[in-house]
Image (cartoon, rainbow, N blue to C red; front, top):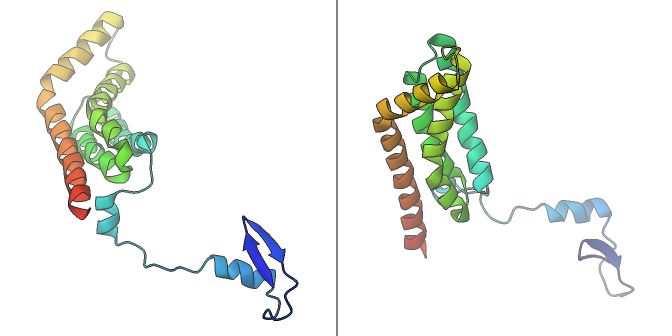
Length: 169
């Protein structure tokens, strides 16, 4: 009889054992699903297996197309970047492990500053470092309500995930 022990197939000499199982049968038995997959809502609430770095990557993948669209249209932090920022701020805490929620909670201000800096840098409207810094600072000041809304939405998702986890214990 073939037995899977510590990742290796081993055999026994027991004569009362059932017939020898082929390797294909043994591999097929390894992939039997014993539990139903979680629902999409349950997976979103309980979180996936992404680390904090994976959450940062997801947020960047959500925000980057919006920033590029703003660069192509008018090179300012407009509606596409605003919507992309809000979605990225809420997406990161939804897809990380519970241990990565701190990273996701601190991410929105950094995302926002990065998006504003990228828009100022690639817009071509600034002649030097001084103008670039003034442009970024002015945009950050004028868009502060968007930053606060995104951070608040992110923290609401984080607190909701933590509360859900505590209630399920």
